[in-house]
Image (cartoon, helix red, strand yellow):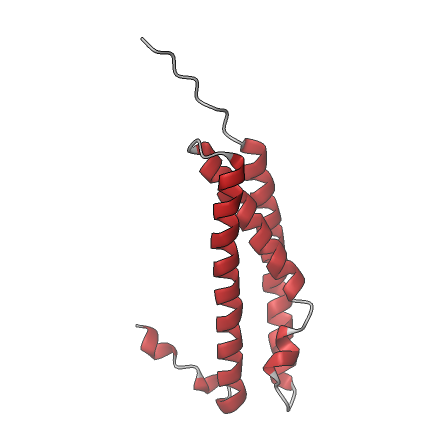
Length: 124
């Protein structure tokens, strides 16, 4: 019988990614709620001002934590670390850019027609 030597799971990477992603995600949620309240109270409601706010830092931290967590998960399935981080980075960066872009689209809708401009009924 051929012995099979399974690699150790990168538990520390999983934990670090989870803690960074979770911590930055919680910070992002709180900062986002506060920023939306402030932004809605202004007359101008410029989406570019909102998107240039300090929200970017915890958002990037959340994406970084997700990337580390995903890479560690891929390494669990015996994918080498270099490939795991490359794949996780591409997926995470693509997702993070898409979500940030969609946030800008929603903010422009709110700027044009107020909060009522977002048609949540169409999502059913």
